[in-house]
Image 1 (cartoon, rainbow, N blue to C red):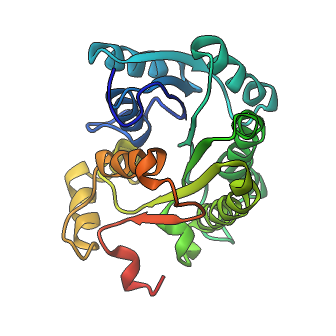
Image 2: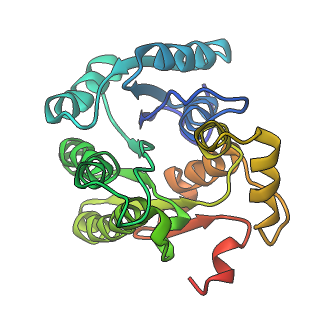
Length: 266
């Protein structure tokens, strides 16, 4: 296939999605990368979700292979680059998309919820970087895209474990960018805001017992542009950062938020 990523291989960790009415960030990234010519290793803890994404990629004549892996397992993370090399023979892009929103404010949050939040949102992302980056360094090229959150750019006591872990993702991204820049490897993050995704809307509606329309309206009203973004907004930003169009960009945390963080001074 031709396209901005022709001949390249992308690993998308969290390439399945939560149940919902719209497409999620991970699945949209897989479809976008494949549409631009990349072979895609679709990694997800849920094998059925990974297979569904692979089917969608192949329906658009793209190349994709599924891999079941849990990023809280170091053994599984070690096997991710091995699976990509076995399927495609190379690695060019690591796209980290896994995240959870654990617990609530400090006094209600349990220590286990705090640990789980960091294990998934930060440590798992670090582990995938740990095992993929040596391959990118050895070939002298490649890019890492970490999906963070606008929450990591703000204070937010109602979801302190999420906010703090995403802020740590931003810091890790910048540190890795500095470390690997001499080796031709770029590392960037994307900070999505109010997105109309299964995780952002459907899961929240189920959790608090509200209707999807009610949650979507509340979220849209909080955005200066007056509406939520979509997973395609995030995927298109990721495509830009993964492509040669961003060849001189590393260490950035790019908000995709319709101006939301402008209201907070972030």
